[in-house]
Length: 160
Image (cartoon, rainbow, N blue to C red):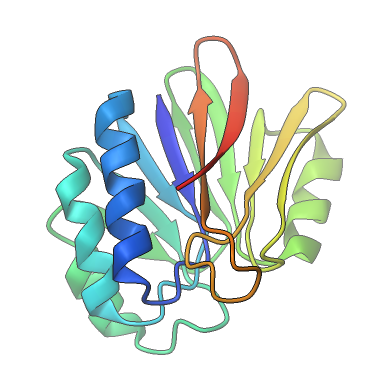
């Protein structure tokens, strides 16, 4: 299982709930699609017990601090982040416009993005497009995260 979140915006309570969800689901990877905001928030994902892959969002100004915070258990970089996990090709970005471009390429099994604070799961051709919504819950009042099963290719958005 892969745990997916975005736009946590320093909400430690919501991050801890997401980590618990990912632990309970037995996640082998956690993906964050940007906007941690501060390094102290990024450190929370170390408790998930699996590697973390992340991209910078438009509110992630302290890039060196975020890289240092994630280094013991994962990585963060400028989008797009492209990789393969359990036989699936992933592309991770923060901005929806970048996600649209990557989706139209048809080169990825899963395209993950954030930024809009609105959750979405849809298919475009053979590509699953996923926005886990906002984990922080500051804008919509609803904290969400997603789980993706690489084996079945199915994803779900969960309130946390």
